[in-house]
Amino acid sequence: MRLPQKLFFTFFLSSSIFLLIGIKVAESSSVNHHHHHHHNHNDDHDTKKLFVFGDSYADTGNNRISIGQSWKEPYGITFPGKPSGRFSDGRVFTDFLAKYLGLKSPVPYKFRKYKPNNLKYGMNFAFGGTGVFDTLAPYPNMTTQIDFFERLHKDSLFTHSDLQNSIAHVSLVGNDYSAYLSRGGTIQGFQTFIPQVVNQLVVDIQRIYNLGVKKISVTALQPLGCLPRNLVNDQCNDTFNQAVVFHNLLLQQAITRLNNQTTNDHGSPIVIIDLYTAFFSIFQGRENNQGNNSKFDNTMKSCCTGISENYTCGSVDEKGNKMYKVCQNPESFFFWDEVHPTQAGWEALSLALQANLEELQH
Image (cartoon, rainbow, N blue to C red; front, side, top):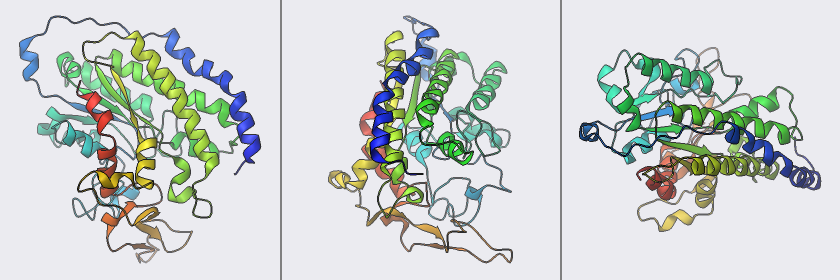
């Protein structure tokens, strides 16, 4: 899967033409302009809500219990003490974002009928394993997740003023790319596939905005080459990270363009959550000057791993024997499994992302 470095950079230079594709969509379908200069005082008392779309970095329990890795032990051992559908030993980014906004974590879409009181905090439509397109996971892609949201809005479960006071978080962390490779796509093919993914992501963000949500955060891709499952000789896979840089560049351009088209009393409507820089700040140990933020003994190893390559965190054999091992102290690990941060990892990332999060408050 590794492409010779020289070839990769040639593709990189030749791909500046794709920057044009990357911004085409944004130009052709400008975000509706809404100017609201009069403020209804009643609206100020409405609870701000958080609506979440995306994948396992944001899912808090939508995956099916029967097949979801996130519903198996030892997921959830740190919080809430048992599996809760989160892909971590504890809390995930959604939980830290909600807390930052002064909210409870919004209820997963599939539990909306069981916990009606929690609807006042918003709703989480994210399903682990999904992307903007259909992936290998048997779950609704982002378009369908937004369809669910739109239906609840049309059914007046969430009103127009709810949406105007709320924040949407859109998590896209690479499932489209792993699905593409597992279906036989090549690294060379990324130069045409990456702009397609970013274009669709921009269409999705515009749609959420046009439904009435005036503040949206979207993740830049984390360094996929540094996830434990993608390491080459214990080092980050540069080829993957170059592809990530290209994705993030196109995303940055498209979002800048969208923000420029939108006049808003409250700063930029769309904020990029820069996971790429945040992950690297932790790998490089820069976070240790942030007060109580423990330095991780292990940044590139996972706390929970399969006992061999045939198994992953949470695997059991046909007799129910554990086929995984868990580290003694998850707090000293940045990664929980081959792909997902620990609760301590997410806490450190949230601190590293303070500047992005503050933009959401304006």
